[in-house]
Image (cartoon, rainbow, N blue to C red; front, top):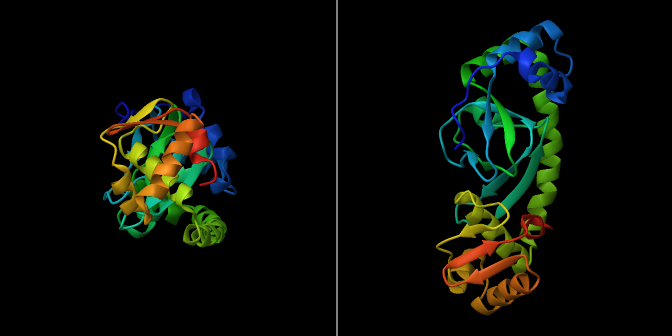
Length: 236
């Protein structure tokens, strides 16, 4: 994880300006934004580090101030992954903050990032004080649901290569190694990968060999080295 979060003045960090530029807080008066900024805690996250993990019970709400994060959704059997990228101005953690359920995705930093966190009590208080925030979240969730519906259809028809890529991305993120030259160790055998992705071992071996030949990864005994994260994520 990152260094412990610490409170910083909004005037010194630009947090107030960052919140004001976010569609999430569109229509919120500047006076309220100033108070809201004081309730956030800022912290740094190194590339590859996990911020929230699927299934954990935390309820805090996060916004990305700089850098970027990657979110992965893994099914119960671990065979399907939904991938999303979030850059500066985006937010995450709102679902658990709203309904109190465990985290639905694992979020890690795709590069060194600055994140602001709002604890759940403050989040709930601000939804009551500024209903516009809740309306903006609802509008955003509607748009994302449309995109998710399209992605679910895509998951149903994904080929073996895409499912293998998804598996490698998930394993790398779980080990905080979704970075250039990140190492998955111990890595599953091709037979184990085949079980995870619902394919045969020969098909998985062909995909791994092709990714290795293209320089995206290097596959060794019980180890996979990721050289080009962007290429591995391509098409997911």
